[in-house]
Amino acid sequence: MQKALGAAFTSLLEKNGWQKLSNPTVSRGATAVPRSQTAIARIGLRLDYNDFIEKGDDKTKWHQFKLQVNAGDTIPNAFKNWRDKQEKGTHAVMATVEVRDGADKDEVEAALKDATKDVRGV
Picture 1: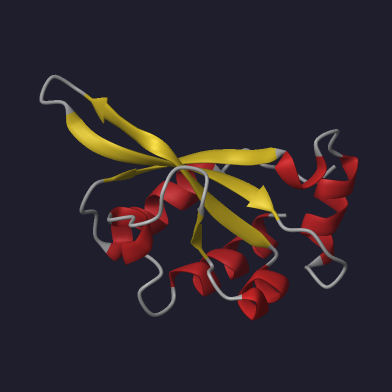
Picture 2: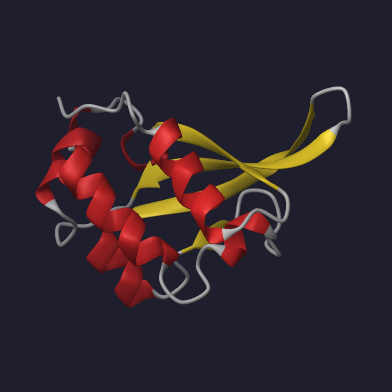
């Protein structure tokens, strides 16, 4: 599962994908990345924008995303198997990812890895 997640994150963050997480422009409930149907089918995961929260004494703004598995049979088997074992299917949340507002690419990648470190296949 971790290998499949790593490959998916590489694809999600390519080009300006990481910027869509550090400074999201989509509304709550909308998919932040990936945006194209081709990428959705190829990667198998999506990050839907949930909301922003404030953390710490300085009330730093963070963006929350729900990592969810996409529908379809062409997605990677690790994700398909995980999704098929979940009661909520494509609405099941694999992990909640929190990204600091204005984060750089390395911070976004670290947030993804940290949020999914305990995700296992079933």
